[in-house]
Length: 157
Image 1: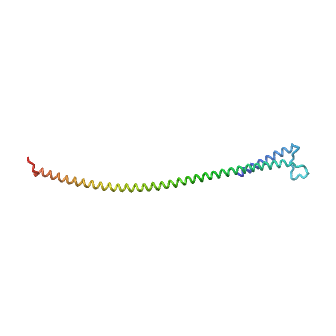
Image 2: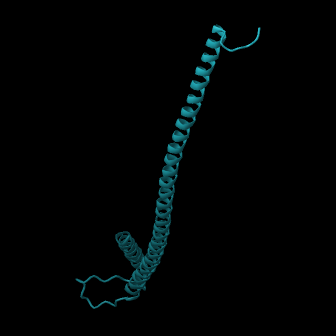
Image 3: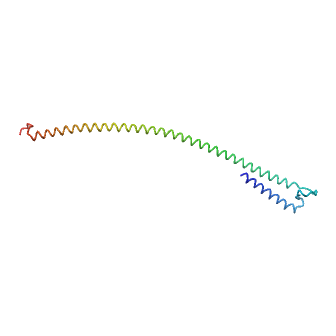
């Protein structure tokens, strides 16, 4: 950016000198005098002053633009810093929620495992109890059939 502004100043100065040189040849009130010309001719310093003013204005404009850009960059940096801080807070909150969720998951898994163990015990108890009842009913039925088949029941015919 500074190089571009310096080049613009240089181009502007060259154009001004060229314009003043061309004007000086046709204008009786203006004459550029070279350093080698010591003839004592009258020097017109207004062209030099105009060039100095133009250069000063170009430098002032460049400095103002540099100041504006510096302010913009500072604002951008502050916005970026604020966004980073906000995102860091969100990340921290998310990590806390994640830890809480993981703790709830571990608790739920432990409760599920305990419930499965109780269900397995209940299943085994029910199957075992009904299995014994069915086995005793089967043996009682088998005895009854055997008694009927052998006529031992004492039922009057």
